[in-house]
Amino acid sequence: MNYDVIIIGAGPGGIFSAYELTLINPQLKIAVFESGHALDKRHCPIDGDKIKSCISCKTCSVMSGFGGAGAFSDGKYNITNAFGGTLYEYIGKQQALDLMHYVDGINMRYGGEGTRLYSTTGSKFKKECIQHDLHLLDASVRHLGTDINYIVLENIYNELKDKTDFFFDTPVETVKKMDKGYVIVTNDGEYFCERCIISVGRSGSKWMEKVCRALEIPTKSNRVDLGVRVELPAEVFSHLTDELYESKIVCRTNTYGDKVRTFCMNPRGAVVAENTNGIITVNGHSYEDPARHTDNTNFALLVSQHFSEPFKDSNGYGESIARLSNMLGGGVLVQRFGDLTRGRRSTQQRIDEAFIIPTLKATPGDLSLVLPKRILDGIIEMIYALDKVAPGTANDDTLLYGVEVKFYNMEVAVNADLECCHENLYVIGDGSGITHSLSHASASGVHVARKIIEKMK
Ligand SMILES: Cc1cc2nc3c(=O)[nH]c(=O)nc-3n(C[C@H](O)[C@H](O)[C@H](O)COP(=O)(O)OP(=O)(O)OC[C@H]3O[C@@H](n4cnc5c(N)ncnc54)[C@H](O)[C@@H]3O)c2cc1C
Image 1: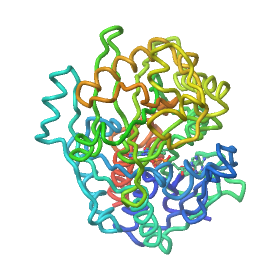
Image 2 (image 1 turned 30 degrees about the vertical axis):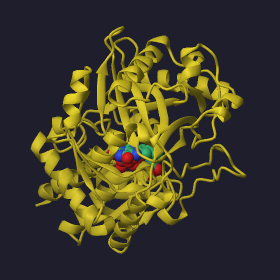
Image 3 (image 1 turned 180 degrees about the horizontal axis):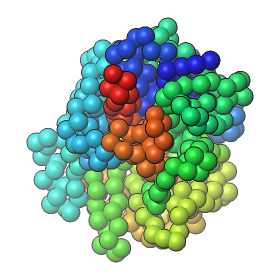
C-alpha cells in the first residue's frame, strides 16, 4: 500500500496532523497506525471491585489508542508557553500560542462548546503567592473534563474516519528509510509513504529511542520529574480552583535551591494509577459533570532532576524509584502527611480513621523509604509553603500518593518544521521530547501538517 503521508500514533499530535492535512488537501492519501484500540474499545479493567489494581494489559487503554494518553485525561487544555513543552523554541512564541488557540477552536466546534476558559491574568493570587515566595505561572486553561474530552475525540474521529485509513491494534515495528520515502513495517505487512510523521507519545518512548538509534537521528536526554500526588478536601484549594481551575505554582526550596511545582490540579477529582511500560505510577483526573465530582482535590508536587554527563539515563533513574514503590506497595503507596512528618508509616487503620476518604485504593506505607531525601525534603517544604496560601494543605490527614513520575522522552533533533535529519521524516508531540501536554502536542500536529502541505506546493 502506498500513502502520501503515514502518521504513527493516534494521540493529539497524530490526530491534529491528520485533521489539518485532510482539511487543507482532502485528496491526500493518509494512513494512521496506532498500537492501541479504537476509542470505543478502550477500557481500563480496573473497576475498584473485582480488579483493584493494574493487571498490565498487553496494550494499556489509559495510555494508548485513539486519543492517545490524553483520551481519559482531565482534558485541561493549557494555552501558554510557560509550561507544557518548548514548542515555541522551534516555531516562535506567537506562532505556538496561535496554534494552541486554533486547536482550542476546533475542540469547541467538535463538542467542547460551553466549557470554561480560566485565566491567571489579573488574578489576585499572583500577589498573594509572591508574598510567600511562591510563583503563579501565567496561563489560560480550558477545562474540557474527562467526559467532554471523550465526546470531542469521538466527534473528531467521526470526521476523520472516511478521509483517513486507521489501523488500530497495529504497532509499527520499524521505519525503514528508502531512496525516496519510508517503509513502515508492522506485523500485518509493510506500507510505503513519501512522508512520515512520528507521534508516539510517552508510551512510545522506548520505541522512539530504537528508531533514532537505527536511523542515526541525534537525541539528547537529561531530565525526569519525581514527586507525589497530593489529595486533600476540595475546600482547602477551592478559592484557587474556583477562579483559576488549575494553578501552576512554583517554589524554590531553601535547603537545596530546587524548584518544586504543582502540576495537573484536579478539583473535585480522583487519583488514578497509571501504567507506563509496566511501571505503576500515580496520576489524577476530574469530570466536568458535577454528578461525577468527588469531595477531594488532587494535584502533583514535582521536583525536576536534571543530570549532567556522563549520566544519560534520567528516565531509568525515575523508573528505578517507581519500581521501588511498586516493590513495597505492589503498586501505588499512600501516606498521610502527619505520618510522614512523624517518621512513621501509614497503616490501613490510620487511613481509615482520617477525615478524608481516599479516591484511589493504594497500599498504606512509607514514602521516605522510596523517595530520595532531597526530593522528599523539597516536597515537605512546598507543602508548608502552600499551607500559607491554602491553609489546611499541611494538615495531618493530607494524603500523599507515590510515586508520581513525569518521564521526558529524549529530545529528538528537529528543525523549525519539526523535520529530523532525514528529509520528510517528522517527529512531533511528546514522542519528540519537545511537548509534554495536550495543547503543545496538538499544536505540533497542526504545524507539521501545514509545513508538509507548503513543501508539496
Ligand atoms: C492520565 C493522564 C492525564 C493527563 N492529563 C493531561 C491534562 O489534563 N492536560 C494536558 O495537557 N496533558 C495531560 N496529559 C498528558 C497528555 O495526555 C499528553 O501530553 C498528550 O497526550 C501527548 O500527545 P501525543 O500525541 O504526543 O502522544 P500520546 O497521546 O501519548 O499518543 C501517542 C500514541 O502513539 C501510540 N504509539 C506508541 N508507539 C507506537 C508504535 N510503535 N506504533 C503505533 N502507535 C504507537 C500510542 O499507543 C499512543 O496512542 C495526561 C496524561 C495522562 C496519562
